[in-house]
Length: 87
Image (cartoon, rainbow, N blue to C red; front, top):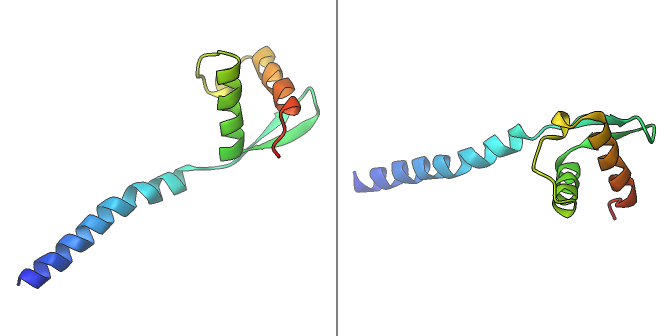
């Protein structure tokens, strides 16, 4: 009986630990964002999100979703982004 309780506890504990990881993995999705100024499309994924947050930090801007930026703010971001490509 004790052995069965250990197995059940181990299975439950494993499920609790794995659930957040699988939720985060499925919550990440990729979108394509078009840059009108440079006439190109960008895949908005984890890498682009990291670059965007670096931009916000360097420019001392408030943390806002890219989708909530006005046209000029988006243009400013893409100008910065084209000067800071991934290596």
